[in-house]
Length: 481
View 1 (cartoon, one colour):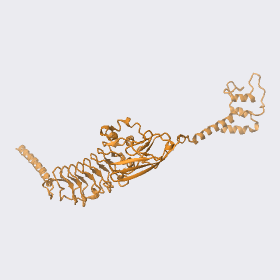
View 2 (cartoon, one colour; view 1 turned 30 degrees about the vertical axis):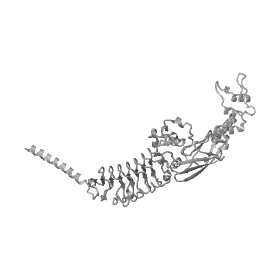
View 3 (spheres, helix red, strand yellow; view 1 turned 45 degrees about the vertical axis):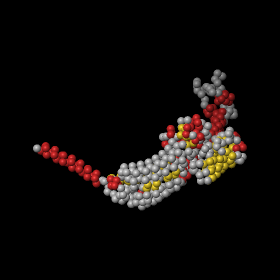
View 4 (cartoon, one colour; view 1 turned 180 degrees about the vertical axis):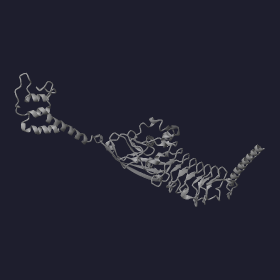
């Protein structure tokens, strides 16, 4: 009987727990005053409001002000109207991915969290342009996701005022150019990732890219575009690969270009190096200086810096001899690339002078000019000269001085009167001045009469031969040595 009661009690506890979970789910459904019946099924979880996959065509109204994360993805939203997020003063993350958004009206983020909004996801929509007024009220934005839209252009001031921006994703759009000059200055000190891959970029303004901070160059993704094959672009990617930039090393096979602008002539930058073997890579990705010095017979690569970003830009150069040079260049001596760079293949003395480039943008009827002063140096001026090695000569002088001192001390002949010694037997060797000198110069000194095999050292012999009054001085000198 007790066992039966225990089982019934346990069943009751299980049913009570299940009922409590059902009630908790019911209370998590937010009741919003909305213009759509679907909005009443949004879920609240602490400071998160999720309205995903409800088929919403308008932004819900009367959303709770405590929301920090708002998820409106996978709906049918067509546009963001003025004041759409009014009253959400704590909003930090906003997800609007997988909708049908075509425009963001001015004032969309008025009276909202403003500086607190950090993460904005507008990916997988139908936006066709990134206009300057879209994010004016979001100075604290750090991450902006706009990939997989239908972007055709990015206005030069679209990212202005976003001083906290760190990551921008614009891949899988239809962009043909990007205003790199608008992010060159210090208005975006934290920007580290700019993804422009899988677009329709044709030509890159390499001078503007080379002026970007190194941190941003490391995170600049340009693979899977429709770039024109030229040496300057190849040199830039090669340099990034040598420096280990992840934007290149992680997508080596996806860096492609088109020969003569034809899709049929696609070349992979890092798999067909033979196509670029004649490229001059001595100074890739450098901002063109106003003065260039090159050795005679070497190649010189001059860059045109127009700061134009239109769709159709034409370039031409004028040489010091007032010769007009346009793509593909001057046969045999000069080569011109589609991005406006001019290569002087084998410089000569007569190639010195001022070269000026003109870039013309037909869309906006703008022209820009850029001058470069080229100096061709002779072979004698280019030959390396050995510098005077002061340390080596000082050491050599010390060694020679030491050798001379040793020669003076040990090899100076004795110039003294014969020593007053008792006559030695005729059978013994006599140590006179000449024998002393010969013993010093000989590698095997002669034996003395003081004992078989005993040798006389140089300083002892010198002391014996010196006069009596100077023997003490010389003895002390040699002892100190």
